[in-house]
Image 1 (cartoon, rainbow, N blue to C red):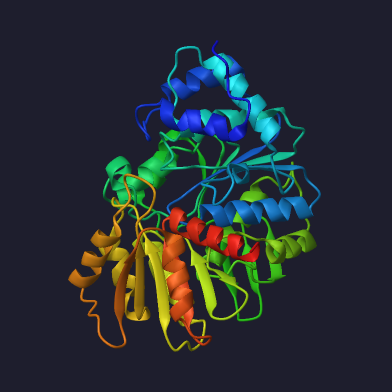
Image 2: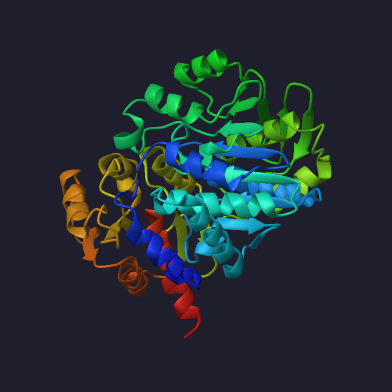
Length: 430
């Protein structure tokens, strides 16, 4: 074996260059290496897929289970600033040395099997979580479900949060096709939860055909509430007088209800008390999901990158109160429904700062500018479209123009939000 990298950045750099395709669907290669490594979990595993809401659902599960005193492992992605964000044990990011050791183990086991960056890092993180003394593990699916590398693990409880049109090149161009892909994380005889209030028939049919124990929103679990509090009702458990999750946004009660359904299904092995649910929901924290930063002008960070998420962002913006002008820092991948995203937000934004992103499959700022003009955004004294080479430049420009009663909304790709997070972090350190 050649000399392996000895630092985490060197390892990640090697993995980025190694496999010929960034996304290479199929589980055969990953499953072969997983079996060689003998990766097995000795505690319950909760797997979460969905178009939107995966991160919020995982964060709520983690917060509630930690409040209940359990040792919790979490795999989530992508990361904003540090790769270490992808694996957490008891709320703390895993340190470099543990990642390096896990990467070494994958490298030793893979032999001549070629793995993508995502496959290699998924195996490493699953291996280090499987070796840690944990009571429960939460795994967030990357893309789709059926063919995602995370799906080589058999989950005890599988949650599908929402199903909408995204990643059409890989998952299909209808909710029925995408629903089938998401349902691929369900397992025979095990709990399968769907938090989408209008589940595609393909998801229901697949769960039925494999004999999964399907929990549907509105049939097996539900919520109701007023402005002060809300209640959850499941198959055999009620939770009353709950506070709203600290994560802001219109869909968070749907996500929270699916979380409580998952916990209800595990109540014999991982009992959780009412106060632990309440505290967990209030304590939960998730960067980049309608995250309103302190200070003036108001800055909102949101990874909305498809029409479904953009509609939610628009609704949340409407609930924020009056702002004289709204500036947008927007960058997107080219394969997204960019026109659909713009359509949801164009009436809410006065000044667009569109940006290039550091990936070959990103839309250029020039392409985004053209899409805005084509969809009827007309620059005048009150409206503008400016192009920038990176999110940091776009953000600094918006900050220089915005008054203290204005707001800046940063959205689109994770890379857009990460760039602005970096700019804010470096500004704090200068």
